[in-house]
Length: 144
Image (cartoon, rainbow, N blue to C red):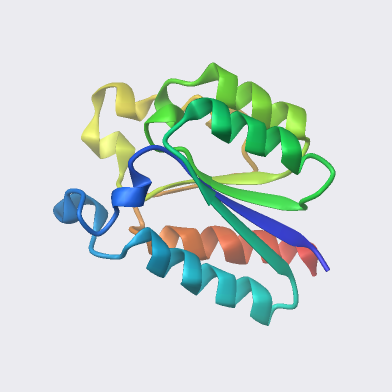
């Protein structure tokens, strides 16, 4: 039985309220419940964590090393700016898939720079909240 960890970064606790024309109407709680059911129905464990504090995210990733078999991460804005988060994920030695709800490339500017992408097992961008489901399915396929 594998453990999958879902990580969400800054402002993602505001999904459903935050710019629904870009991020949709699903709340983070709804997304998390949907993913938990998906993982548990496949016979695996699921854990979720959201924070607006970068140091808390780094500590959670450090703690995941040797305890989880896969990570789905939506780093939010940190995905465009945080070498510290990229370093923490590299140290964790856990396959991870980076998810962005919106098409960050279409939005341009700094959003087109992805600091975590180089170490990721996969990237899912611009598929709305269903991108999380795709990432979970990809990781679950590795556990089979």
